[in-house]
Length: 378
Image (cartoon, rainbow, N blue to C red; front, side, top):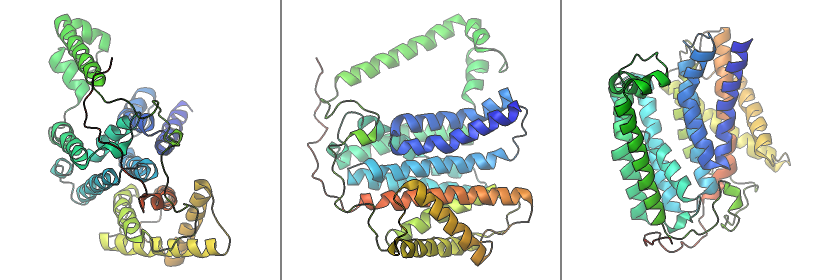
């Protein structure tokens, strides 16, 4: 009973927390990132659950929360260049993960690093107190390039090429104890190393304070709530209006197709080829968009994301039955569960994409003064 409770709680958090990224970008994505890193440790420590098949679901959930972060960029950000860079970084990584799933060649994860995630976090930190339209194209490219070269490439090499674990390295190599020993035992084993590690943390904290004191004056009060930035202009076109069903269709097909190839690994014994997935997704997404708009024109409008999700889920299940199993697999319970999970996540992403993508264009604001001026806080 305890095992089931822990498993359900973690899974619900991994499904629910990413939705908070839309309104509370910074705390929600940091929580999602930490939860992604800690979930298997939680299962191994608190339960006796067999995690053999969880790896596949874990990958799908990673892509799911990053997809919602991508959607949050055009829901909340005002800088068109920042959104375009985020899109480029997101799709670049998504292509890399897709190729890795198809080939199993680990260096692809180094060639296609997940720069998007930390770029999103960096912009979320800036938007806590400043208007993102003040960031120039050069600054935005510099932020992305700096994260790519100095953060993500070393991290991807460490994780996917060297396949090292931070906890193991710190305990075994730096502190000279067994990996299974407690942190109390590890830290007391080599007090000089522990003191040096503490000094480094203090130094990093001092650097952070010094950098903070040299930031420009804030544009607004510090807030983690994207919706509280009420002074930010919205697009002239209301997002509830009935729009041409072809709007954003190509991008949506590309997004859902790449995600579907990755999610297809969730379904045990799936026999669908890449071509099957591409054709199936194109038919499914196009038909979904056409049916959804027809229903809207007849007055069946889904005013909220929740209703849109339920409507998309219903339409997708109906279309899947009508066109046959687009992701064919052996007919067993695990395949059915995987397909249901697959449809749930994709229907949710489609609903959020349809709801918020229209806020990305056309852009209607004038950029503010650049954030390049360096000042010293009193």
